Image (cartoon, rainbow, N blue to C red; front, side, top):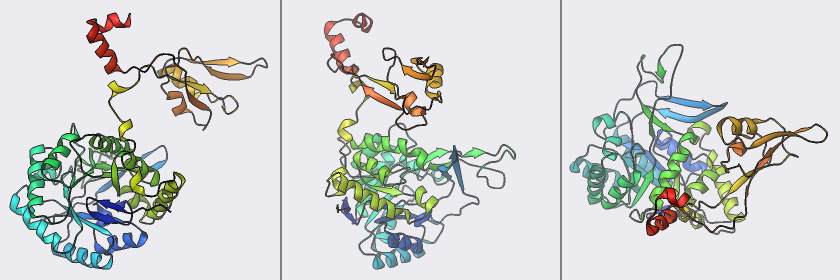
Length: 428
């Protein structure tokens, strides 16, 4: 059986599955229930000066019959006194000494504020700190959260202030509401961050009730933008993790967050550079016990791959992730329709005919039976037909043999420049 333990920037955990700072980690009762269920760690719901929350707070986006494809909230940081939270953190750590407890922190961008809260939370025995520079609503309007996280200088400065007082590892949680997350990640590293975590929630409005015209959710008929998370944001989070993991100036561990719902998602994030993951929406949707399937699935996967440790996954796919200009222009795949599996629903033909390259023909065999066939010479290998096909195995994307050597766009442009010709001349 593979070893699931991780050492994340000096923070030890029995497995890579942590609960993210959010409603599931609002109290000692909840975190202790989570640890009993099998979670390896928890990032306590963000601590700071207690605030007042509103009612209602949550909304969800469903798609094609799937509930909670995306999740939206307008909840803020803890609304419980700091002393109460600290007492419960102490009690929880005492009861579960081998589980990771991280304190999420958010205060005004003032040196003395960071020094004060860091010392207070470390006094109760936390294993590490996570600086919340990501919350996009409510706190941002007060100069905290994403308002700080969108300014590289503030990210660096506040990280430095926290590190001045900290004796435990400092993780910086980054906002996705920015043009290039690597810029703020580099700022965090410059400020002394021991690790980074991403992503926090994305600015969003879940919807509008077309009967009442109220936003969803609404508070007495008024709404506000909130933070979006859940399965729908996974591709965005995965890209941002990958961009930071392949940046040599961001050489610190990454905690992956965003749409992680099962062990397969975890494997993807770790392959793209995350050393561990944090989960929120899936736990809110299905409860803490989902971690049992996540642990079992990950363990079985590692055994099947012949890997002895979960750490063997970290970053293995990063070298395969690059820029568009580094992709081979001479590589070619085409669609192949397996007529013995195809149910002749014609979705592939419609999609290709209306919105792609019109390369799927509707034909009849000698007996008059209809079938579909791809004209390989016109197929560009876009994958659309296989994506819309409702039957597994009905369409394969097959690589074509190619006598041409690999050539990227960057290589092509380099040759053009060396020859002193234009792109148009090169094409001719």
